[in-house]
Length: 118
Image (cartoon, rainbow, N blue to C red):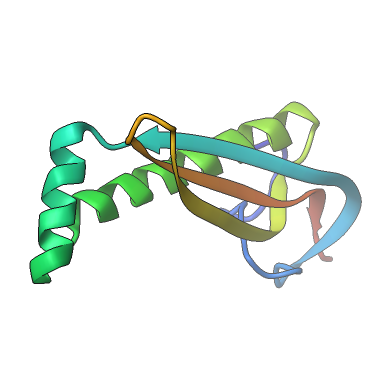
């Protein structure tokens, strides 16, 4: 991100201690959609039936979230922001219509320009 924002330039809070908002640039979004393959779906269904950790699905969701955040930060950087505040997620799973599970994650927040308080 541009400028001298704090090291964590993407936060869920509305403020960052020690910094003031110079300019709010608007809402930025990052979207990522991933699918599980047939084997992953079958194993996930089997684990769901008998109970157990859904490690493959957890990894899929984590990777999808990271990609959504990276996309959001890239958009923020492109409009001159040095931070994103109020970051949130929206996620869901849907069927592609061919029996294929898809995981969608949207990361969004407010792109801002921050400056250190003096």
